[in-house]
Length: 350
Image (cartoon, rainbow, N blue to C red; front, top):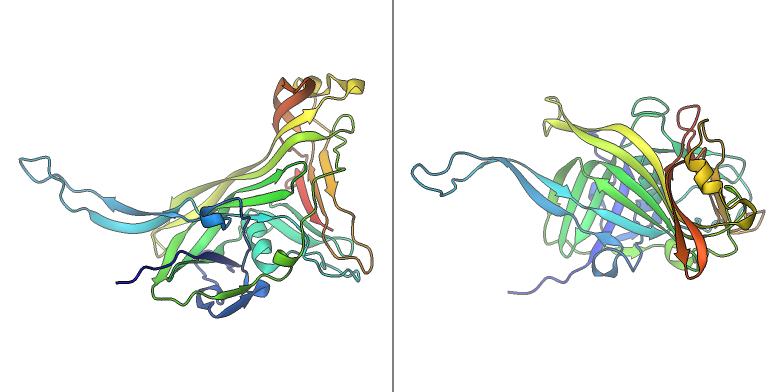
């Protein structure tokens, strides 16, 4: 008997529809690169310093009555196996392409783009070479819900997970550090498991060779221009399993709602020290946007490695004055709002 070494890796690709499994992801093997949808994780997150949190596989069943005259359980009726808790964290950076500039040149690599789309963020070309992601209006309007196929290698095992969405897409923006994105995947169903698999080789290209920008010399002009001690932005999607007899598993994933949440500790500026409290008690619709730009927008011959994030018309839902040392910060919670569908946020690679 021989042990199996622990290794873990992931690849993600979009499906054309629910239960229409990707044509390429299941067959991935051998030497893989960024065009195959592989995603390089953050070493300080996940299992085995990989950035990937392996899912817990759960037996779903319908119990039968205990053995008559006893408390002894009888074998249940198997329904399906499900996967819970799969997450991937990665460094937010550009694709490293040298700008011409040309349309969509800043679009992230395939696997990272797929995770944005699965989180309900619709990608589109902006002014060359910019690439924008904005929230989908609903699950059927402004672009239908995008599902993805995931291949997960662990040791000599390889799972194919189909019809997945992203229930939570978080950006952790840490001063003196970097921006780390985390996608929590909601798995539609387990398509297959193969054992005795030869672990592939991975060429992550600029995901490995390009450094993410350090969060420094960055401010937001929400209220006064100032910095933050911590900032987290989350695309929080409400995802439900709905019963559907036409589906192979008798159920499907449906998105029922979304919020773009903000949690931050902002340094209070003496020129407008009551801004956060006044924002909390606004009687009119909010009109101030929390925005920031990290890195310089690429010009011709510059590598693409910058990011802009907007949370528009920020609605503050709670505010707590708090100390950092002897300095006053405002600890706020809130979410983006808008007057038209899908207008409450922007993630732009530039």
